[in-house]
Length: 80
Image 1 (cartoon, rainbow, N blue to C red):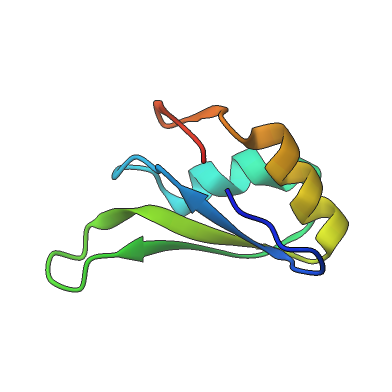
Image 2 (cartoon, rainbow, N blue to C red):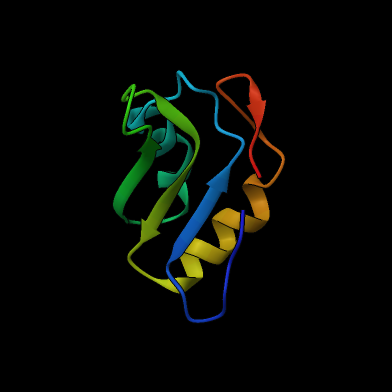
């Protein structure tokens, strides 16, 4: 996961291809209000790619989530 000071959006890498928005929402929502979850999809096959973005309402929640969830298992794979 990557975080920049003043930013509310986290890049989330190493997602399993079967991971869903709801899985990400359940994992990240305890850290604060989530504005948007977006898992990137292949244009050709419409299958999930291995990364996405989580946008929080504020930077404190985003930073807290990044610090506490980096390396935690989601859908069988460690978050990055």
